[in-house]
Length: 497
Image 1 (tube, rainbow, N blue to C red):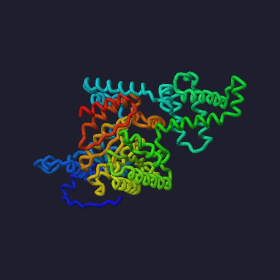
Image 2: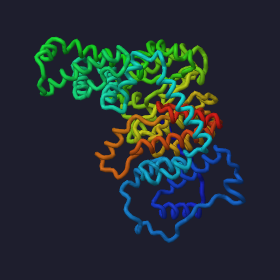
Image 3: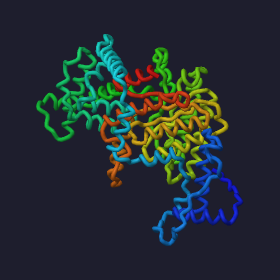
């Protein structure tokens, strides 16, 4: 990104004061000037008057008179630190909460998530109605019945969910067979036989039961009968193929289509019922420039397809797209900030401008915790880009399981107001929990960037939802949750607002 040097003429007295002040905090005068410019500029963009900024006097700089630079502790990374852009107050709060101790986060979250008793009562009643209506749904069958029988509270249900999501990502037969063998080999499938009135469920259970025994054979367990041995020799590929088909049918509940055209076709009947979609593509983290170029072309193609399907319904009534920044650049990290701004930002802007042409929303999707702040830098660049001025289709995804989530909302709300946008924010709970925990453990860090208990994430989600609903002028909130109680609470809060 090109930079410009601005010269400022100052007298010798002010120059000496700047030098003493900078030495006192272990920085350079250049850094101090940049910090002052950034701080004042942010306040002016927010709309503060000059009287509010300066009063009757000019701004002053606190000077540490008695500090001797030689007495200050050595800072081997001082030169690198001076290249880091100064932070606003709101961004500094985000950084400070990165690995904040969990007990320190909860009191404020609980206070912000606590609702009046009438609201919680209404939410509980609505959640009960939703759950009861789904459970008594007369036409429930096929895949829905299978999901109902194998809930996520059981080992078998978790195994099936893993298969359903993972099989759609695996292109080769050998790896699919290995995954099926691993996930279903030790499940107690027999316990589910005959529980469901659905023929589909019972047939699938028989397949899982037999395949589970066959898979156990490959792990070294002996078969109990010669008949099972015979089936193992001739029928294992056929049975496993049946399980693969069943799991792919199940995966269609979570993956709308294998191509954008298929996804758009499959969603039409649900759009007619009032559902709205932001399409995402499985697969991220480009590792080469060729990968990034291929992903960019696919995103571009998807925007054209979604835009034509939207038929000028607009960013709220029509579908949109979610973009993973790691797919657009193979070195998407803070260590490569200059490259990211010079190479990734133009690609992101080009996709956003294309989305604006069709008037469909474009969300910057959430990824790993260590990429949050760089994504905020790119979001700010988009919001202040003159080619996107006056358009409210810029979106951002926030993960409630991150301890920084409330502060991110404060920052995005302020950014929206400063840039005269209404930013679309989709609040999710987060999908990288296992890797975030493991990475922190491997690195030997004292804290985690995410909450370690699900109930804490739930509290954070509700607190964040209230923040989003309280800023309708700056935020267009979107909520993604599969929990009926949480969803009912949000609906009730939205009604209150």
